[in-house]
Length: 408
Image 1 (cartoon, rainbow, N blue to C red):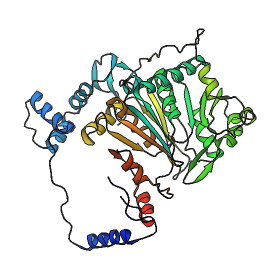
Image 2 (image 1 turned 45 degrees about the horizontal axis):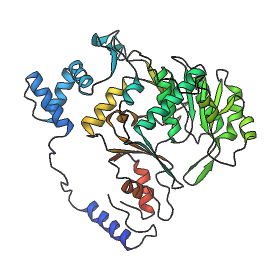
Image 3 (image 1 turned 30 degrees about the horizontal axis):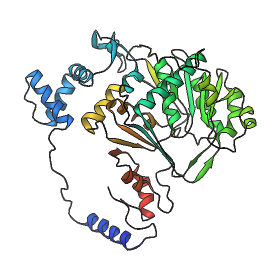
Image 4 (image 1 turned 135 degrees about the vertical axis):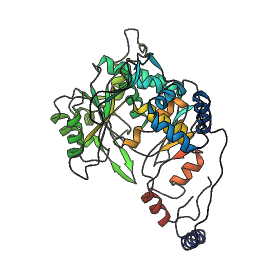
């Protein structure tokens, strides 16, 4: 993908683009793509199923029909196709436990860990590329990601996190959120939280619903050019959630003083928190992955609140298999590809891309708004510069950029 057309001022390049749009909108629709790409993972999987089950599967719809009619076999084959790491094998793929739609159990008897599967890549290729609206960039390799998760998990264990405990996150799209989420799920904890730009009242409601033992946050972030200071909202949150034991604060600004931290009840800086996880020799203990049922909860994602009080939707480790199906069969992601994610913690789309880590896919995480621009800086240029393979953008963002004369 190249740069942008125009400079945001509505110059001739932008007018040419608008004219093309107009012509497209009033002319007869034309077929723009009708090419089958060989050797995609979907094609490989289709051939594998056809050969194994001796079936005349020729098209996508043949495979789809089989996957619906023989859905236990379909999900069993995906389990093995993706080489799911499990300490105990399943004894039954699908068990109906009642009359309701949700009354069922998948992969009964299996014991595994969500984070262990995501952390299977441990080489020196980039796992995370961290970006923001200021133009900062930081790369974290898969080997470094594993070590960071180990540090975070050691601290959470030392501070008393156990299976089933909740950890809330009130933070923008930062690397520390990913480190923490993987550490928490390695222990069997449950992750979730509000959007970072929610007011303290809204954030407190969501966090209070979770009843977290810990809350992870940062002192500052910028979204669409507007500066936010979550640290100023933490005092009432910490005072009003009885389950809370620690507020872990990522300090990002020199202007944040020790007194600012101390003003927050139960507060501890991230550095001090991580230091607490070291053993008596000053080393980080080994990372232990708790082995849990396939339906053990890993995350709570909250609805937007447009239809009433935000409702927490619990997701289990079963999402691992469904998301790998999407990434491999539908998007054809593979090692070395790059997934651009602008969604902050609090959106279900924040944690949706994370299972692609186990494929060796780099997560390009952007702490900022997709429609934010300044001279020489916009999301299309980021997507071009970092050679992004896949992203998702709401049409409203694309429309906002087009109105500024910024198009791919």
